Length: 279
Image (tube, helix red, strand yellow):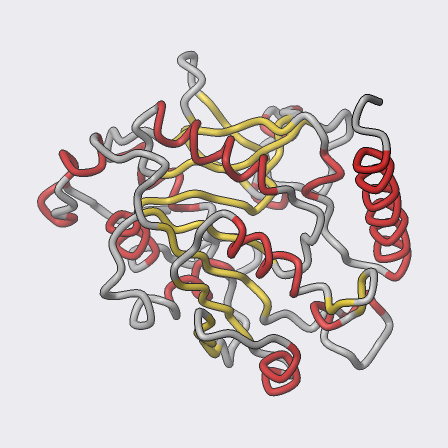
């Protein structure tokens, strides 16, 4: 699937990466270009309201809370409406006219972030329930393992439909394989990809430039950067999240209703905690 890739081709100054810490500069890419046909609505999926705000507002707030200097929002379907719904001097909008996959979407951000050096957090516009503490823990894991890429994962008893995380005996990621491309043995894996990543910027844009679309979907998968890292003997790590609801993607009206209930319960608990700090 991958072409020849040597360390000389990348020139990433790995000594800098080994000395990184979670206080290094952070930028965020938010994938928000999809239409969301299963929502049974003409409205772009990320514009559907969740607890009084468009869904995409939540990953943007998260990116700001964890200290992102730049937030690149990838837009496509109803791009103008999305830009009207979210404002901020820290936002950069990147157009993905053709939906050629997540790898292609991230590659479109290369020019917008070409001057940035540090960690890049990749979030999904339709995953609104992630908490700042989870992202801080993801970054801690990334730094402690001196990884070039760390992916947020979780465990499902029934992982049907999700990309599987394939590891070696040292618990380092070899690759992430989408279900349609997985072998019968790989489909038995319970650890799944959430689509949330922390990546060193120098590695990210070199790697996504080398992804091809030789797969069942004919798309450029962002997940291929894990195999690229493994092939170069760089560390590709996972951080396993205990609560899968945090990474629940909103794909249907029913998912949206569930997310609203979760959000309401969170607000109720926060209110009670403030009113009764000893509880």
